[in-house]
Image (cartoon, rainbow, N blue to C red):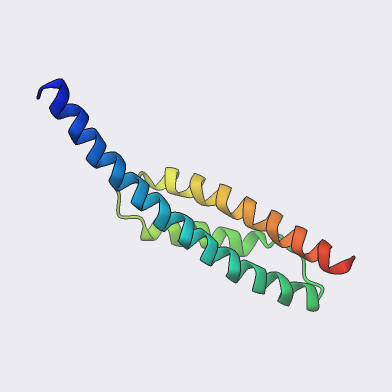
Length: 99
């Protein structure tokens, strides 16, 4: 492969990555909308934001659903970070509604 061919191939791959990233952001925002509803329910019932058993179940579901090539432990770490951000969003929304 020549350098020009490599640059052209990289441009195609990068355009694909950009599209995948846009879809991921849309899905994460869809998840946020559901998390906001969950936060409203938890707040109305005076439930804690953090539910370790539920988070463990989510991570088990993620690991089981992962067919690769992403290693399962990588998928779990990504979702740990996503859930951490979701808890922050829930707490912030709950606090803003209290004030």
